Length: 261
Ligand SMILES: *Cc1c(COP(=O)(O)O)cnc(C)c1O
Image (cartoon, rainbow, N blue to C red; front, side, top):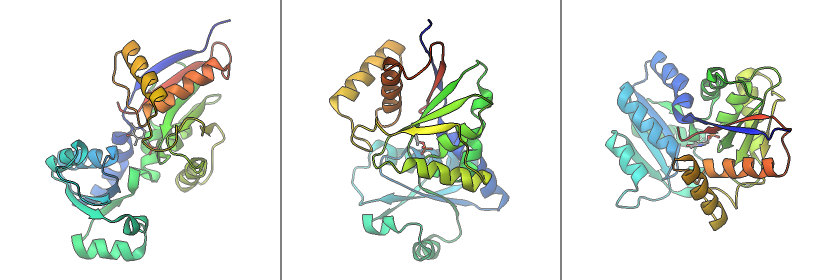
């Protein structure tokens, strides 16, 4: 009997999610990208950086009030030329409404809109390219799930017999539905080669109890990289727990996508 084999693949998901969005923005002749996120959003950082290198103005609509000095994420976004616009939590919840859209257009003029977390069909298509770039044979591929675009795409890009497992980093059990919606919007169907594990969110988004923190510190020391606590640690903890619980057949080759890149 051979134990399941775990391979780490360092592959940042945000550039993949942006690739076809930037192409669409350019094809439409847009000069400005506008998107939404929390104050610690990796997506906000990624849009700011992409705008800087690809020649787009960028606007980040940030949930909540301004806190000065800016945290590292927002300071980085501003250093890349992003304009920040803060929205109170209640207005932010209505960010996808026509009223809000009109307000943003009257404030900022024309823009290409990328949704919160960057998950839309263009993002799903970008992530679907990931599995095909993996040279080693594998049976299962794992990723963390925030808004679901990464999992939706990875699963769609798999070959026969392969499956994907997403590890929810938010509580509430709604992410399966989000991934289904994204696959439906992108491909007109839902694939049956994936599922979401909802048991490893550790209390919800950005919650990092001691047990998770210690696991991440040890895993990072053993493998020589800094394990992101918000997404990657929850996936790695979940995979490790599932391996220990015998959830994978002997010899299963498991890829863990380290989405921080
Ligand atoms: C944004 C992000 C995720 C979540 O990706 P989704 O497509 O929103 O599910 C996972 N890991 C990292 C490191 C991220 O920044």
